[in-house]
Length: 474
Image (cartoon, rainbow, N blue to C red; front, top):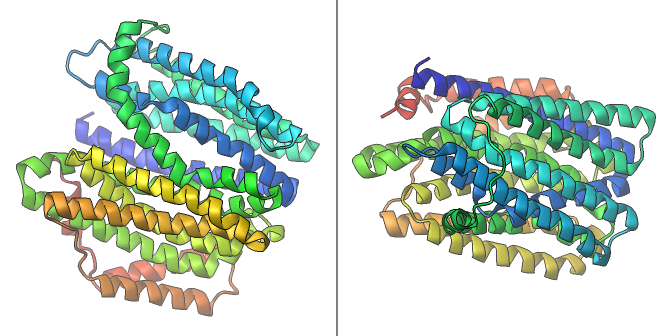
């Protein structure tokens, strides 16, 4: 199979697998919210919020470094993977050993503290399999990884369904995450043995070389966690589980969709790097087309989401979470801004402006934490709205800062053509959804897609030629 066909196949397969995995995850959330209620789901969401925290603490940029180092010509893949696995195992064991010592001092119930320890064990498995992904990226066979992740997610949700039916306790419900991570690691590990057979290596001199390259990336990952994911933990410390449950029912929807911007930008990211050096005109064209596509995607996402938020929450979380509707409506603006923040940061990476990304993320992380700490106690009756609003403002900061750096360093800022027509298409879609709002949720989504797509074609907002140019490989 040719490289272009491999890339196309992987993109299509991975996209479908990610969509199915997201849908499966939302089914799991629906089962858990209905089974545990607001308080129980708040405890569950708090425990799971520590998974990305452990990930940020133990990341150190190692997954990205693995992918970059093994992709280099004549790279000693076995030595690289064995040593980074050894280093990751060392870091993960330290986190796993320290967690039971720190958890008793957290202001949580005994039940939640045990759940956090279970999550720490899940992190260890997750951290190891993330390292192995680089081998699949190098060989353009990411379809196997996304397929394995989908199977693991389906099994986890199946276990949750069994647990709800058999009325499992809270620990067993949280334990389904451990099963999911174990299966992901097992599948990816067994598949990786077809390429190279290795065991963890502990070459401390080589570790120093790896860490010098990886730590800057790890710091960026940690800052991203702080400004995007730490709000659930801060809310859980300052407010009761009920508030966390209300916030998280909506936040989980946002988190499960937020991978789309990175996936879309990933299709053209290599082209940014290539044309920024070879052909500035082509580079600007590609950026403008991505910018335009993101407006085409986010306008219906926000307009349709605002109108259908009540049905989405009722479908996913159930009638007991009606307070989550407003949280989701606010979160839709965060999700839309993530598209543009992701695009701008990838442009900066292509231009080798990573240091400026670090400073931008640092400002955003400080703003997010301080704002949540200050404002959550001021609004005890609806504290769950505070992190949602702070997230929107933080993402605005991300877009403003990264956009400013692009304009300052590259003397260029993306432009979008036919924005009024895009907005009009979105309003037409919104009007149809509003007038037929008594219809079933899925019927309204399908109707919205048909109306919006028809309007895009009618107004000639994007042409076939633009799509071909956007995806053409150099």
